[in-house]
Image (cartoon, rainbow, N blue to C red; front, side, top):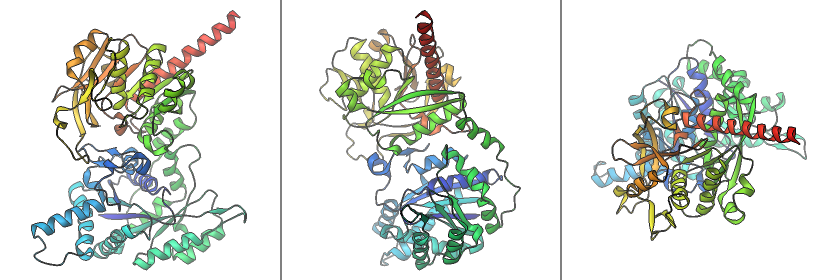
Length: 546
């Protein structure tokens, strides 16, 4: 087993997760089985209780683990199917250590950061290695070198590498090389200082990845090589990908990043064949068509809040030879100024998941606008509940219909708390989480897209469509497209006489890959492209008549 540890310095958000995922892509192209995991030093047990403004989206795995969004990169870039053991936080570490102390597992010893906390961190690496197998484990350590909360993780890794041998493990350090506009030059000093901080801990990086807005000069490479004590080929440039993040593996490949990793770890493989990956990227960069999709949410100003949805739209766009231009629409703005102001001329409308009542009525107006104007509509999780509320109010004659999440005393609770959620007071890890199986009706758009009567999708929600209103909604024309196999919950709804009006309770974005776009996203993008062509034909006919 070989080990790659990815650390970060200077500032956060440099792209450690993307670098780790891109390396995983390159090693898989060399027929290596790759496992990725993320260590997060924050004290939350998991990010499930954190606001998207704090930490971006929460990514959900098959086993129901609520994890860091970087695990989404790992699964999208590689063939990994990750579990809760692939994401470790300080909260989990200390929770485990304290439970052992309460049970008396330490036999009266004083419990300390070293060795008890550091041993627990190392145990997670060993557990993943033992249970998931593979050739290479890539471990990303969140935060920035020098952070107090990250010190136990760094010490644990230092100890771990001593045990497995330096020939079997390498450290990849991602740093910032800023460009000082007034001086007109790049500066290597932050990188030097960051590596010096790492070496104080007892860790010598083997590779330094330099995040930069300008290409590295030979002079800068020489300085980093000299002062960071690494060979010049181990200085890797990491500029923003010109078109898409999926270019990152190709950019690293061009610099021989994977060659150096394999040489350092004595991994003997053939050179990677990136032909298929290049083809995927080419479809993103140079498509034949372009559509505008409105994503209507309340965390819209934050790029990472709906990260997986944006990526799934990119995957589907590539499959449909179409560039998807995402228009981020604040649902609260729709409440103030109306849907037409923001949604007129859009080729598709998507309402993602979320919690809380802020901006809800704007989402209802967006769903109504899509239904009445014949614009392709896709609702996800809360988006499906919004679609049901809107249909109940305006088509099924259930005035004031709502979800009990927003109005507990609504006269028509068409969406309500799941029965098993009654009485639960803890908010962390208590939702309906992870993979659930559903049955699809054969005469539906959902069946047409999946081409299967049974599906397995990832969930994250507390509220559901109230089964007491199913018959009334279906009588009014809303199709129940799928229900869960185990507890008969509504999983999908659609409208038959609409160009594309489909919503699901689960999160299909978590299963979409560039190499395997999700069928619901592909169907939505395809319908939006068809709507675009219809609008274009109507404009052409109008001009000809004039």
